[in-house]
Each structure stands twice: as C-alpha cells, then as structure tokens.
Image (cartoon, rainbow, N blue to C red):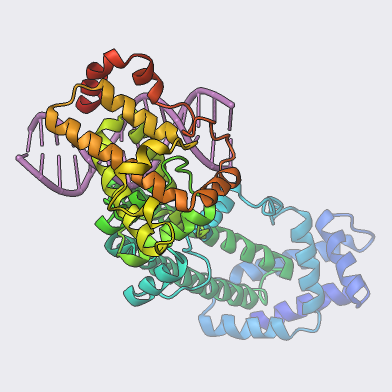
Length: 455
DNA sequence: CTCTATGATTAATA
DNA sequence: TATTAATCATAGAG
C-alpha cells in the first residue's frame, strides 16, 4: 500500500514535473531516458531511479498488492500518455523487430498446390460426398460415356473421402487458428494495460500466427495432393487394364468399318453417333479416369471410337487375309440390312440372293481398290483349300457389300468428298494400299500371308 | 504358364 | 490436328 502510493506519487511527479500534458510527459521521459536533463535534471533522474526501484520491488509483493497496484496504475491519468510514449520508444528502439514485410509474395508452391486441389475437385465447390453422389457426379460428368462402373465410382468415392478429410482438417486448422489468434489478441490486449504493446504490434503478432498456421495448412494441402496423386496413379495404372468393348459395341463398330471399307474414317458426327450407339446399346464398359481429371469435354467417348478405328485400320491393312472372314460377315450383314432398308427397287442388283452373278464382275467401283486388293491377296495366297473357298466367298461377299453400298453409292461418294480431308486415293483405298505388295509380287503371297498370320 | 486379340499410348508425319 | 505405325500392357483362351 505504501509502495503503491509512492509509485503513484512518483509517476505523478514525473508528469507534473515537466509540464503536465501528454506532450510534456513524452518530452520528459525522453529527456530523462537520454539523459539530456536540464537544470533540474538530477532531481528527475533521481525520481526515475526511485520509480525503477519501486518497479523492481513489485516482484516481491503479493498478488493482491500487485493487482491493486496495477489497477492503480491503470487508473492513473497519465497512463495513456505514458503508454503511447512507451510504445513509441519500443517501436523506435527496434524491440519490435521489423521483419514483417515478407508476406505478400504468394508462395508459388502454395499456388501450385491450390491449383491442383482445385483441378482435382478437392477444394472446389462441394459436389457431395457419397457413393450415390459419386454415381450422380459420374453420370453428370461423362455425358455420353456414362457407366465407367466400379473403378470410376471407386475412384470418386476415394476422392471424395480425401476431400472430406481435407475439408475437415482445414476447418479444424482454421478454427484453431482463429481460436489461437483471439486468445493471443486478448492476451496482448490484456497485457497492453501493463506493458507497452501497440495495436500495430498486435497486428503483427496476428500476422505471424497466421503465417504459422498457413504453413501448417500448406502441409495439409501438400499431403492431400500427395494422396490424390497416389490415388490417381493407382487408378491410372488401372486405366491400362483395358476393358474389351462389349460384343455389341464391336459389332456396331465393325459394321461401320466394313460398310465404309473404302473410307473408314468416320467423321466427328459419325464417331459421336457410333459412340452413342455403342455405349447406349450396351453397358459398354470403359475405363475413363480422364473425364475425371478435367471437365470432360464429351468428346472423350469419341476417343475410344477413334482408337478403335485407328487400330482397326492399321490392323486390317496389315493383314487383310486375317480379316477376310470378318469382312465377309459384316459385308453380308450390311448387305442384308441394306436390302431390308432399301426395299427392292433394284432388287436385281442388290438382292443378296443373287449377288455373285451380276454384281461382282460388273462393278468396277472406284473403291474397287479394296476388292482388287482382297482379290489379289487371295489369288496370291496359297490358302488351304477351304480357306480359299472362304476367301472367294468372302470376296463375293465383299463385292456384294460393295454393291449394297452402291445403293447408297452416291451417298458414299459424297461422304468421301466430305469426310476425307486427307485425300482419298483414286484407287479407292485409304492411303497407300497394302495391296501393292501383293499386287506387285503376287508370287510372294504365301510368305506374306504366313508372316501376316503369324503376326 | 504361353500366346493371341485388342484397347491404349506415343512419336512421327503430313 | 488427325492419322499412322510401333509399341505397351492386359484380357482371355488354351
């Protein structure tokens, strides 16, 4: 008690001793601190010394006493002035380190992580997280190629799991950060009543805390990214586990292929239609992680068709003999369908019943390249008898098919001019025929056949 | 297991 | 950019 009054007195003395105002107080302190005292400097110095002594003595006092004194100090009329002065001093003496300028540059790595999380749909808008939602999302995402079945939804489920964890954790961190921040702020504010803490300093402190927490968040983001990467790599590996197209899908594709043998380059629309047909007709199982990674363009399903046609073309070309049977089959099929469809105006020509007769020989179609080619291969090849027979038959069928095409021949031609951007060769074939080899050197037929078949 | 069929990927090409 | 040709890697049959 006694001490307290003395302190108060002393403080008052400091203030009053100069001029009484805030300004005065400041000057007084500064003067005293720097030791530039004037005439009565010694006396003031003495005062200050007293004060310091008394302050030191506080530690020896009981809690109650300290509280009381604190209160006393807080209520002192000079307190605000002193406080600001002390803050200023503190600021000037560099006690508060001025290292708060390296915050603005947004960490590129963090940006990268953010971008990736966003791209993967982890941090993006909520899409719901459940198997049902996953299925819905899958359906929504893949427009045409809908059922990517197990793997796809599995992936989605896992992803949404990650996402959920991520969000939970993020929220937790956020909350902790806020809690901690407010706690520290309160603490500092509280302390600011007894020691010089400027609002600026508090701000800085908050900044530091936030930085700390954001670095933690970055770790979270990083590990989330890693998890996604792992998940993705696992499923991307799985992507290579190819699924064969369904029987019907290949049926449809083959049909198209063999009915457009002269120009098996489906246009975009055609591809789309084929894709639609295939995936609608059957639960055409496709592995499609791709649509997940970026907003599926819808053209993804066309990709499969393109793949298929690419493979088909190349493989057909590589070894026609091997595909003869298939060709026959589908040619016949298309012929039949054509017959069905195109009624029977020219039943003579297109009737499947009498295709061989007139048709084959009489038609030297522009796309006879195909026929010729297959012909020559057949001729050149020393197939086993049965096979030859089959070959001939197939040839016939192909012809028949060609004829059936003839019904829509003009259509086909239009198609050519429209669809084949890379010139359809005049010989009717696509690009350079495989024919040449067999044509030019039919003698070498067997060899080529063997190699083909072996291949 | 091997072997073939086949979907997917990739580098090269026009 | 679409295709080709080569290649990879698996599915499926034996």
